[in-house]
Length: 333
Image (cartoon, rainbow, N blue to C red; front, side):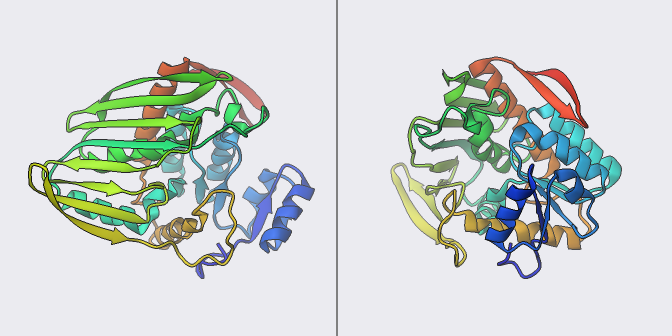
């Protein structure tokens, strides 16, 4: 955020004051709060970014919307599509900006991909194939990836590929989703999923067993687009224009990451968050309540796909939702 002139990190909150202060000292943030409630209610805060574990996204996003604060919430927005719809409906009712943090959609490469699709350069999209995996071998027993409600590979990274369905088939929805996979420690560990729609199909593999290539292919009737890995931090796109069976011409588009003065990140390529920060700022300046790059409808459709994959691979989750200190159980199906 320090690299975006239009934005300023003003405060951070954590479950303990010492944790908040430690983070603030490390990232040159002037104010700290020992709880999330006080940060959300602070008059000094213009936009709230919610980056807690997903189990608490619904609770704090709801409070932020009710406080009238423009809100960006880390993926997934909530633990199930029904809760995501509730938050979207609440944002509409209160006229408050809300965005699920699908930062991949804000990269310049994705804007170029959208242009290629809408211009019909490679014809109508027939299918999309992709993979996303990273080794969880060193994730300990207390790691968030094994949490019963929000854990598992689909809830963690499945939305990165699922969102391509909406991008490639903007006029239609996936009608049927079929998924199979393996379960480890009670959560989905490897998944193969296929979604069928009116216009084409989406097929992908997710895994916590290996570091995969992380490549996406969008096949059209007149050519194809290959997004080289890691596709969720897209930096190179190859467009192949068919010249006949087995023959094509190739055009390469490179999108280097912004200059990175920090170097070390928990996740490679995180300097790319500057694109999302800029897009949120521009949307707010224009008075928008959602971002064009990833709309409310897209969040809801992706959540529905994720729900169905998880249900088919490991069964329904008896989600325990906490709001204002009151816990309520619901089944996510």
